[in-house]
Length: 275
Image (cartoon, rainbow, N blue to C red; front, side, top):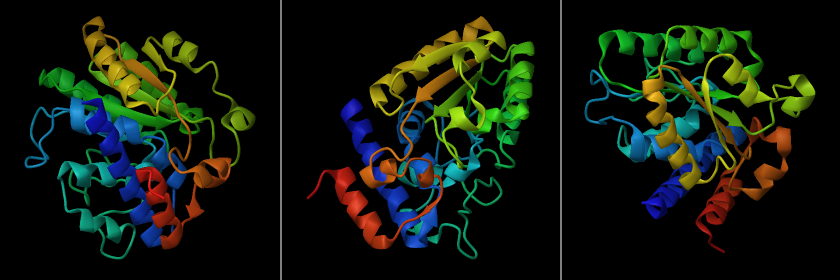
């Protein structure tokens, strides 16, 4: 099982490199850092059906850090929501795959990403609706660490706890970098786990958020907390640009950067472990 997930992670990473390399520029760092989470959710945990993308009672994934859209698209294509060939239309005229997630354009996207923080608020609302419908769905929401400087994230967090949304599982992509610099230098969010606990959430800290086994175990643990009536935040300690050394080495510079097709091909070979 874990071997399969690791191979899926390689496939998703390679497809991210292919579509951003074809376009020539993109939010590569924050896409590569969330691959393990996407593999676990879409290929192991979520109650979804690509043949019925709007099925009532399905689990939902909301990517509040919407600039990581290309990573979500790669996961969706690998899961069978649309042909992989469409990835090459990323952010081009007439595409169904804009740089930021849009539920009105892309099959499998459950919520449009707006300004940072808005997706997380929407996730709380969706979780409340699911709870009222008693449809059994689990709502998963991903926020960035830079995004966590937004007050709206914390308003949504307070609301989710107040409404007893045990069906809501949040994830923080804690790669410690944002567009300008290290998160700690711009506006430190530490101690992050203590903050979420103070807001009434269960908290799970994953030492290596780029390890599928650790991520898988954390998601299962989070789902077991549903009966507590409290939402759960899973803090994923990740590496921005994970899997491609030159991108990792850019640090905060990999937030949005140029990627040539030649660089993408070299990165794919690195991901695959080829010479």
